[in-house]
Length: 136
Image (cartoon, rainbow, N blue to C red; front, side, top):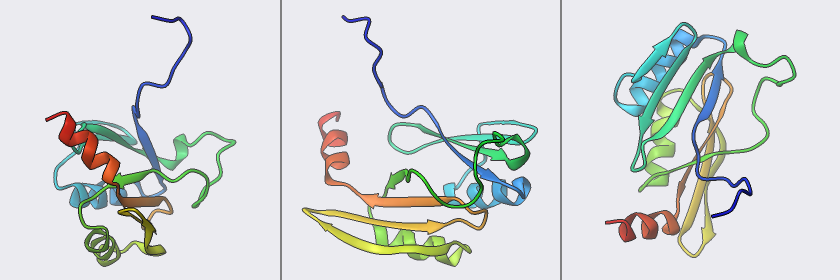
C-alpha cells in the first residue's frame, strides 16, 4: 500500500441548470426514476451497472469562475445502442452536438446538448462490456 494519492473511480458527475425544476423532470424521465437524494437546488440519482452518481445543481450554485454553456470535458455514459439513445435524447428536446461516430474497434460515440446547456455523451465501449462481464 502506498500513501500516494490516486484516482479510484468516478464519484459524481454534475450538470447545471438555470431551470432546475424542469431539468429535474427531464432527467427523471431520461433515467426512468426519481432522484434518491434531494435538497433545495440539488438532486442525485444513482444509475447504471456501477451505481454511478449524477448530480443536478441549480445554476445559482455554480462557482463564480465556472462558465455556462457547453464546453470542457465530456463524460460518456455507456449505452448498448448509441443511435437509439441519441434519437431518444433528440426526441426529448436535446440538440445534436455530434452525431454517432464509429471510432473503430467497436467504439461508437455521440454527444448532445441537453435542454439546459450541458453536453451529454453516450458511448458503446467494448472495454466497459469486458470489465462488466469479468466481474460477473
